[in-house]
Length: 424
Image (cartoon, helix red, strand yellow):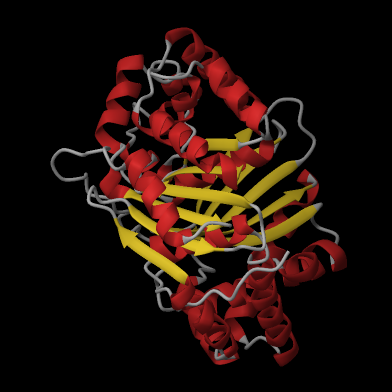
């Protein structure tokens, strides 16, 4: 499939009277229409006592509406071949759908019904709660998940949204009431915090007219709640937690610290450095040295979670417990090397090719274009971002990467979470 060039001239962006921001990218080469939406809301509004509220309340939207029972909604999707889903993360609530062009009005009607008229029927919502609780219990027995969950709790203070995971804990999800779900929906589902992206075989004026008809009557009262993720302090020392899990033979490790926001000027340099460090090819330098050369890990990789807030920069590894100390030393040694010497020209060239090439691949589908336009809107990158992006990446130097790494990578102070056998 081929898409048309994505330039400011080919993207229509309007704000409806009720505050919904609509972006449309016409692609006549594909007979379907993809819908992607975001609301600036999510788990950041949960508390320790209501952890998982946004996640459960949002998932429950599809369990029944004024016009559709859960069964009727699923029958309609099956009958027409449409898809639709909705979910909540920490910073945003997302929804997405896909339909043939002749079913676009039907998809919009279903979207409006789910977003604005959920009924939270008791029987179906309790089934959903049981499914989520089963997932949480399963996660409690997964060393990789537990290591990461406890890492977040170590890395961020209890008052910070990133201290928790958005799906909550079993003990809090059990206690959430239907009234709390309805209240969350009434409070945070608003048109003036909503972005809707449409990509497919439809003209912009037609798409906007149809969206206006389906969602134009959605109104909000008062002002939306403040939507921001606070800064997080860096660790002042090494903070460590070991979580024993019975019956395990592998230890999982997460080691890291708060990183940076997506809008930070250092984002591109640090991202390229981190790619070389722990993701490129078979997991970058970490994979080559800690796993392949030294044989200290079953898997090892890194990731920078740069979002609206400064998510963690962390290394994840699965190791034999007897290699635990040496694996951690090997990881820290690679961080020191990244801080001490510039990346090589070959590493930098390969990383630049990878990130520009992977974006080009993403833009070959309507879903990829819609997701990218949603990110451009969320992070206020500008509609000419895709034209500027290759030059942004090509301009980054090894010296910029070194400076960014020295600014953000910690070798004396970090959070370290280990989950594994009882005799760790």
